Image (tube, rainbow, N blue to C red; front, side, top):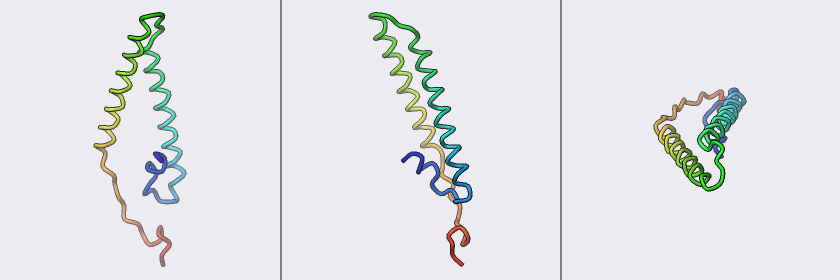
Length: 89
């Protein structure tokens, strides 16, 4: 569903580039997110692991809120469709 929203309104001639860009951003985001989570967690052992996991959850929640605010602040640019794009004479 997120992929469909990301390429919504893109002309069919540019759809493959938009889809590839979306997937690339997703993969980079996953790699960076996992790297941050591992950096925050470290290598806890025993009872100290609970505190490390709590810190990791707090960092992930802050990241989710920052991402939601960033997405909400972006305006969608709507282009008028031409008759050629719509397949009309």
